[in-house]
Length: 238
Figure 1 (tube, one colour):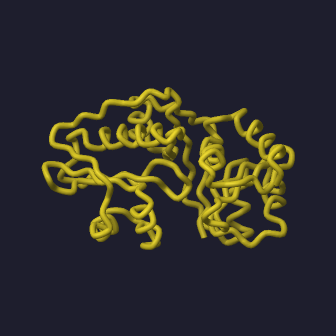
Figure 2: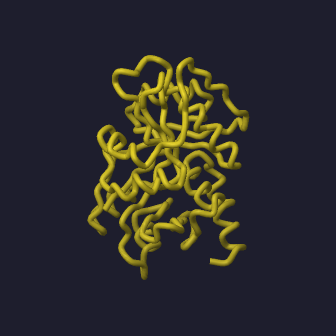
Figure 3: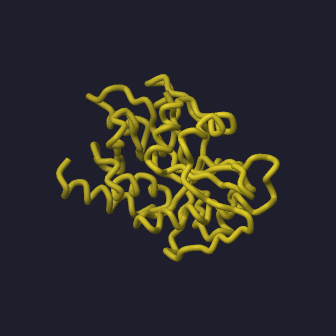
């Protein structure tokens, strides 16, 4: 798609910024490209994963039209009335549940001081601890997060206490604080660190929260994230 058409798609997505922040960030970070834009339907393909798509569609029919002539997708982060369910039926994908985007729009870095806490890059040799505490299907994907420098360890008083990183779509997540280290402020500190990590790279920090996770919505708002619970999206997984 030519650059003028892609810019037109970006202007359309910006009309509902929070709902589309994952799509916009994929484009702005150079990790995606618009491959379909008709009416109110935009399909973005992830550059490094050609079977991974981000979709907003005005109707189920419009959503399916965006995939005509393309290989069946392995994963689609979809939004639009009835769109995830239609993709589920058409491509045999599984719906992970509905969530909402949250984004940090202030641009100001956050202080994250937590006595006894060191935040550092996660090490490849620590991969077994990651896999033991976080449910991820593909070990190669987990290793890729580490090798790209997008997974960080929370080390408390010299011991691994948790971690946080980027999901495959670029959203902040993979957050886990081990049970024995909870209620020490570690989760809040590492999320603040990661907001700064994104800001340092000129990115808009954003994440996704399941619609029924009241505790997480409260935390995100407390950290200064803009929360929009009126618009939902769904990961449709192969």
